[in-house]
Figure: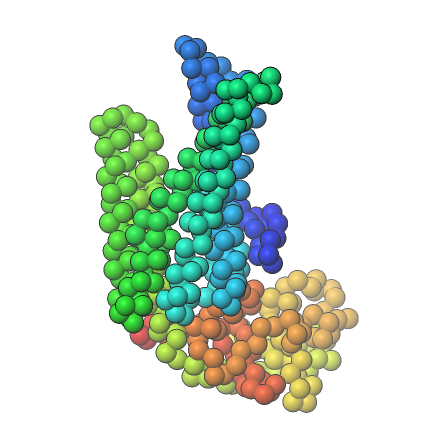
Length: 380
């Protein structure tokens, strides 16, 4: 899930998926044109939307997703504090997701990262709830001389939304936060992350079936269109639980093997002073698609591949040299041969390159990429 980058907080890219725009427009319409006119004019037979209700709908929608973002930032903050990189946070149709580069390596870390999101949502529910109560008291006493009903309504919606977010996310089903908390407890008790994940994922699928069942009853029995959303969320959770379990199995397999066991030790080298035309004719075209190491003597300078060549117009190949377009060593997240392949996968996930160099005491000894990791996983 990539989406469009809209900002950066704590060094983490914030992005929105295309589906986010659908839910935002739907929520603004539902709140601003249906729910808020009804709430602010309860005695009207056909209450109409006004600029106030539409503005409230926009504000409620944006503040709700700001609350979701705060929830994910809380997860990310704890992950960073425990030494786990976070690549980005993406807002999408079902809320938000923090893309953490590595799975926690111990139960305590899993527990702390998982619990921080619900704690943030609980704190926001308390803050908005306190504002709701105090504003209602002020409005009842007519202290300010103007009606505070729109702001009170906004605070009530945000209180309920954040409270619902806490309750839903604490449901004991993986990959929900509650499921991750459950996995951390089971993991700590059994010392077996596969077994813990399997049981937590079963909890996630049980909750998914409940949501799908409730959605079906709402839609077919009660003729309530909201049941479709319950069913969609249920199907999403069902797939996510299965995918989460498979990912855990994959990472456990990669933790059992070191980079030096899978790295490609035979690789092609090129000199930095070659022109791009010479590089293409002598190296790129006659050989398989790969990453070429750029060396001066035995000194590793960087890498070059077809990706860098594609960005340069053919007319400039004669005038530009390999050193002009290569990815310099300083920009590469080099691997150590003694690292686990799970760490290598995390580095590759954060990198934009298909392969990363493996350095031993500063000397290039090989490359590891998605192809090598995938080949190993297929054999297991």
